[in-house]
Image 1 (cartoon, protein in one colour):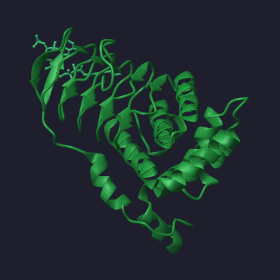
Image 2 (cartoon, rainbow, N blue to C red; image 1 turned 30 degrees about the vertical axis):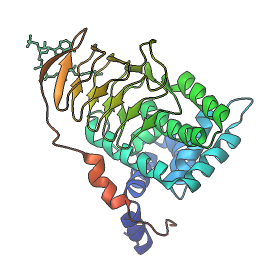
Image 3 (cartoon, rainbow, N blue to C red; image 1 turned 180 degrees about the vertical axis):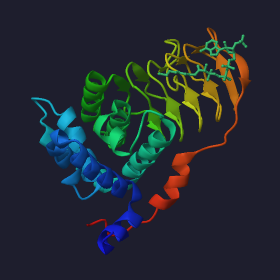
Length: 274
Ligand SMILES: CC(C)(COP(=O)(O)OP(=O)(O)OC[C@H]1O[C@@H](n2cnc3c(N)ncnc32)[C@H](O)[C@@H]1OP(=O)(O)O)[C@@H](O)C(=O)NCCC(=O)NCCS
């Protein structure tokens, strides 16, 4: 490996890996060469690739991709934690999703990953009181990716939203690090409360397909919510619940948190140029 590439791989291992994987795809699948160059290989940093790729998808006739890209670039320049979280998400998806072969695949193709990255930028806009632009992003993400996630929701890192279709994340939802959410999940309100009215999902939780978690309830650390469950009460840590209404069916543990392990390597900062 040339010296500059080696140095770069140490600084940003996720991006370095993605570029290698992209080069492999260009060799293996020449039909996708232009696409892979435009989305990955033409960019020097993950931030630029993400901004380009998501802006191409989220732009509209009235708000063209070039303007959306400026917003992403501004966010990434001001809030490096947003793309540190993206790197942790890529690592988590690669570790947890048996259908995910490379770190490149979620970046290019997985709408759950893309939706979370757009929500993070929307959250940055929301906190900066640019509410309408944040809501514009939310509505485009909902139309395109089937994930309706309010920009005010607080989402940690190492997040996997698998398959993504039909996911709703309400305004006052909190999702801590290392959480996996399958398709059809609602983290919603009951319609009876105002203010804090959506779930808090603690670290390491898995929420199965179609589960509905409603109200200001807490899903304890490393717990599992079985597919199709309806949860309206707190779930203790390290517990599996299932059914309608959800009942405790077992215990879990907190043995792995792959994205946190990777985070330590991502703390290195420096010159990202290649
Ligand atoms: C809950 C889950 C994590 C399994 O947990 P587990 O602790 O291994 O539980 P088990 O499989 O041993 O099942 C324990 C009991 O709960 C029941 N159970 C499991 N999942 C259930 C569900 N979704 N709804 C209702 N009951 C369920 C089982 O039938 C079993 O009942 P029994 O003791 O009367 O036989 C798993 O069933 C689940 O829902 N995973 C989500 C998968 C998903 O969303 N897949 C979509 C992929 S696209």
